[in-house]
Length: 497
Image 1 (cartoon, rainbow, N blue to C red):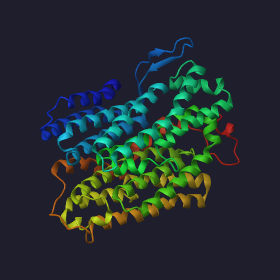
Image 2: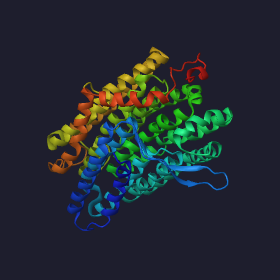
Image 3: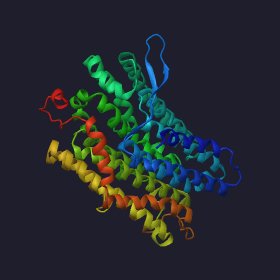
Image 4: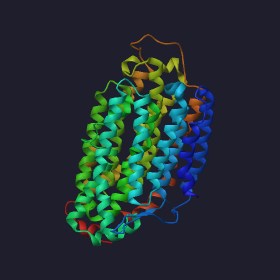
């Protein structure tokens, strides 16, 4: 599998979109969907390719100190499944984009492909500085999408999202700079071997938190979540679907691929802090979701809560947590993206985002009602969907390390998730709308076909999650501490192998 082709295909599609007609939206949509399906055809086979890498080349050298920056792409079970997830979500986002973009669909599609390219680059990077470049660059098309195609407060939301993310990532740049000076390279596999022996423990702790901050903001966690609700609710629904579906997952990806392998001792020492942050995020996100009256703000805080559970479980360092977090990223990426896309459709019908302004869509839009119900039940973690398996594994890992009461506390996310999600189902699909009922309207054939693979995948992986679980076990366990961390264990012993 040619990783360079997988990386550069979205950038080529973005450039080609700019040469399409600015007046024929139907032609633009057809062409963009062809591009997206072709990219998916290149990307999805990565999940069966195992661990692969390109030949490492010196990208450039820093004068005087001689630090080498490598151009190196790598793919394994973790990155491959997230790239496949992205490849599935992009056609869905484009399929529902005409409702939002209108005559500017060409520019919208170009920005979506640009966003896909940068996220793919972050997931494939085998060098820390290369990763940082893609990690920051993917913010630009996301912010432009929000600013150009979002709601009434789109410019404020876009600017806040961009500034908050850039400021949160700035310490990571200085950490990578220090690592490059200390290890004479920023190639990840080499730095993993050198940093523990060549860097003072106090300095390592500072570097650890500098990099962790960037991923905590990206995820995000409470109290670093202040940008999220506005960006998700004011941005166009397709970009919000990609933000929550994949970009937020790159925060968890960073912990699993970069932070924990680089700082094994520090990860063990501070594991309790991350578990606490995750649990606080679970509860605060769920409680905030219950209080919201805006449709997409409910979904935004729901996403916050679910990913908080993933963070808490990850730092138990249990094998089932490793597998469960990867499955959670895929399952939540699919269900949350589908809900955001469907929410965007409903908002175009009602011209409102207030949940009390919807209602009776089950009778007026039966196809929409079926799709929304399936995605909502998958988000709750209904048995038979991928989310159920993921949440079960995560709660088991927390129970094994921290005991029954902490597991019950973490499990509140399941109960609260059911409460606010079923409330949404009731408000949207049943009852009487506050606004006058529009004429019966439903999803188009293109929109239905774009969303169908997402819902099918949620059910398929609910009954057969092994391909994802095996990928996590095969590729990640060697990078994690060898035992769960408890308050009585010595961190150096935990990461001793």
